[in-house]
Length: 381
Image (cartoon, rainbow, N blue to C red; front, top):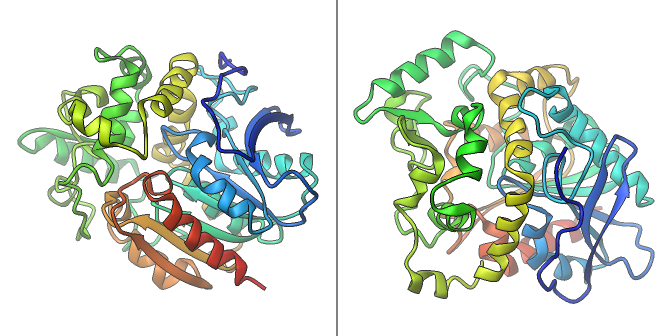
């Protein structure tokens, strides 16, 4: 089981607290909340990504709560101070499938006295939020997807079809044949060794995460994303090495080359060393395997199978998309960004690429993100 349910938070913005509840689906969910001082009918559920936590939403929660929302940001299954999940690589992977995360979220809402909500998801939380809106639009009444586009049901011209082993084996062979040899980060994250290599990395978890967050942010000036033409090795090799890694290197080794200088760290007001220390101490306690299990569901094809079981092929509730203008995540799956706008979201109210933000958009530019979310939510009937 995960090791901690009593992590010491850094000082949270006034009006935000943390506590935990039983979600009725095997978890004691740790979450941050704002707007809890009086009964509010409208709930906003915020779903974080990897390697992040509920804490990643700290800077946008109060502006949203001040608009009259009960804002709830949980540590998702596999993360942080939420308990009840198994971090064994050989444990039951079905516990981490997207349908079970849907039940986690519904159970949390019910435990807090809500029958419905609005939902926003960032990074890994984006496909979870999308699945919620696809499967239960009666509960998840509007959705904001952040950083990771959702293209809907698999299309032949769109996303790589993860459950066709021959297709994936070809791309892995093609990446390995490049000079220098490369590999895709999602399949690296799916390996048995990934967690150990990150937990026990040479530079320590604090410096690993500092380099990782820096490398994917707007602070790394080489993050100038553009669309890729196809799911081919030659096109994927245009992605930064945090997405398409060198074949012989771990993720800590990959990002170590981009470790920011002491001066750059001092100037990083969106993620101070004190704030970063909370992430580092948390992952030192829990490890990364809980989060990595979700990647294993994706690369194994389980997520695609779950989508195919849905009756609805599009997200029909009001939706919006938010990402940093310097976020390669928009284009890491060729065609997904375009298919999202053309066919997957039928009531899309906006597509926002935020200036001076990379992948960690709600941390890098919280005021801009809060403003976009408030305008979106306040115009839903």
